[in-house]
Image (cartoon, rainbow over all chains, first blue to last red):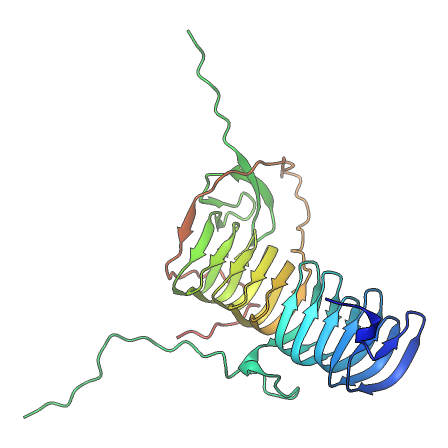
Length: 143
Length: 177
């Protein structure tokens, strides 16, 4: 993954301490501390060593630092080996490396898109096992 | 006259998935009673290639679920991890790495393991706690210290749907057919 700063239109530096709501259309990189809410239409990158105590909603979320809050990605969540998420994760796709840590409810790949956060806990895409019966239904008796 | 050669069977260290007791067994062992809780333990690796609805699927070895394999259980316990290309339904406890491949699916109440690898395309639904370590039981004075073990090729089985009633009450009921 190219982590060059030119890729990110918004960068919160390593010495920054941000509290509040952050919204943007392109990509953002978090190096410092953030507390609040992140709403993005593009990509969010939580760098190694950064602390994010927030609800994060974006199209694509990459995590190498620590997120304490719910994460919702329209496309995918990628957790690197140093990444950690404490909170619920909702995404269409997720990639998790060995060594990463999660503590929360995961809802990944259900219906192939991101369901609303207040949806019911039952999934529709996970089909219940149907009974397999080799017994044919009773036929009407012909007279 | 030549002396008969002393054969040394390779040993492996296993942990009882019911009481947590650690002890040594031969690498050829397929099942063994736990010296502490006296419950029968499956030691061999498990390969699942078809639909397997069971109450409990538990082994001290590794569970491998093939592409067309599907396990529906209240609890799935593996001492040496899980490699899944198919479908798993039920609570998962693994002492080693769990790998969910790109076309795999897991649905259950909890997934707790020491390490988890999720490939792109895998589907998950449930509470995940990683890393996790099985609680170590308090030492008993009669238990000898476990020695280091060597690993060797072990026997494996392909599981058939069976009934096992030794499930603790905290695990969920599966969506049985």
